[in-house]
Each structure stands twice: as structure tokens, then as C-alpha cells.
Image 1 (cartoon, one colour):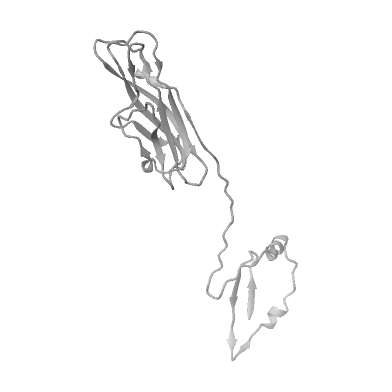
Image 2 (tube, one colour):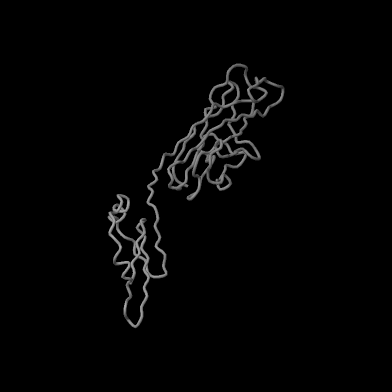
Length: 214
């Protein structure tokens, strides 16, 4: 039986049998013994991988990959596209928007939620709740040129939902999804009554909460 050993530490077996006698070339026995290189000696010290005749030996790497964290941030609310708001003789619907992001780098794919709660706007002589716009109040994309799980797999809040008092789930990632960084654009509106008092409004505070799980 001939035993061939490569310098990579892979072993394959072959044999030539004639009448039950194993033939070994005398020329092979006369070959001088050479000192193994340091690389070969280190390979010999490793645990050999067994494989049978006709079955390839498979060598797979062991690469530990550490996880990151679940995090997020948000930008200030922009009302009426940044233009002033003036009292009119009729009630007005005023739009607002804010951007936020969620980054799930844990690598566990257990899902996450980002929810919003709000207080009502106070115009001294009138108040208004804050509502998600219709028909599409939430737009989610992968952040920058990064790779994330398909945003289409996320569950988004429906239009017209009242954020006061909340909480309202804006975006939910299921188990197996939500990996990577996401940009979230939220569109909403409130009512500016004709009987509102001039001056600075109070309230209208939106609080965002990120939680783990589907």
C-alpha cells in the first residue's frame, strides 16, 4: 500500500493488490529522508482529518464573528417644510416630518421595534393631536450605501394613526429580519384651528423608543 502525504496535511489512500500481496517499489524505499519544513511540521501537529477511499476530505475554516449593538437616533421635527404658520379663517392641516435611524448590528436577527408617543399641541385657545400622514406615513431605506435586510420585510404603521398619547409602533422588524442600518422618514400632520391664538405653541413633544424583539 502506498501512502501519499501532501504538504497541506490532506490525506488520501490508494492501494494496488495482486493476489493478496501489497507491492511496494524498491526505488521508493531508497529515497533519502528530507527534513520537513516548519510549515509541514506544524501541519503534522494538527489533528488529521479522516477520509475514506473515493471520499474527499473537507477542510473548513473556523472564523468567530462578534456582534455589535442595537442603536438609533432622530432629527428635530420640521413643521410646514420650515415655513411660518399663519392663522386663517378656516381650520388648516399642517404637515410635519422627522427623520430617524435604527442600526441593528447584533447579528442575532431577533427583531426590533421603534415606537412613538406624543403630547398634544396647545395653541392657548385650542389644541390638536399629532397624526401620522396618509396614505404612506413611513418610508424606510437602507442607510447610505450600506447593506441591510430587505426593508420590504418590515411592518410599518398605518396612515392616520394618532400619536397622542401612544405608544404607536412606527416600524417593527420580525425575527430573522431587520439586520443592518436603516433610515426612517416619518410624515405627519396636525390641525391648526381658525380660533387658535397667535404666539408660540407648546406641547407637541414626540418621544421615540427602540426596543428589542419582534
